[in-house]
Amino acid sequence: MYVKINRDVCNHQLATCERCLGKFLEYPMGYERRCFEQVIDDGQEELTLEIHTDGHTVTLELDEEQRLLMAAEGWANFVDFAVPMYREDTTA
Image 1 (cartoon, rainbow, N blue to C red):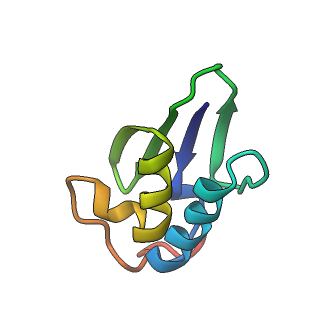
Image 2 (tube, rainbow, N blue to C red):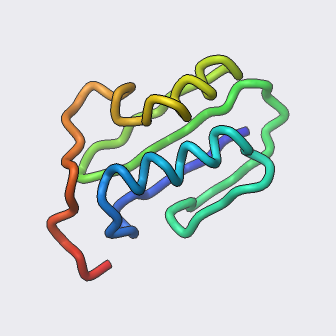
Image 3 (cartoon, rainbow, N blue to C red):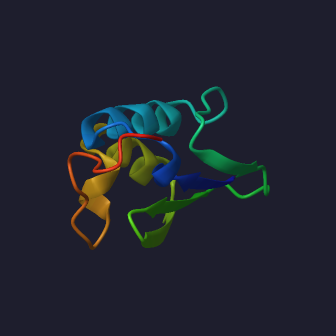
């Protein structure tokens, strides 16, 4: 499955974002949010997750174990840039 997420369309702080994405990672066939721009069943066992946030784009390929680990620990721990806790633009 391929999922493209644009965090810039949502003004929630990081902790809320991580809980929201965590629910999807636990239950990928039954959870979708407004920041999801594309959800494509590509027939792959791995989940390809493309996240766009604050001028950064990262693509992660996750097997089931990695997906559940990210759901528990939060996605910000798996990217190589600092993700701000709070959103500066709260008009979204």
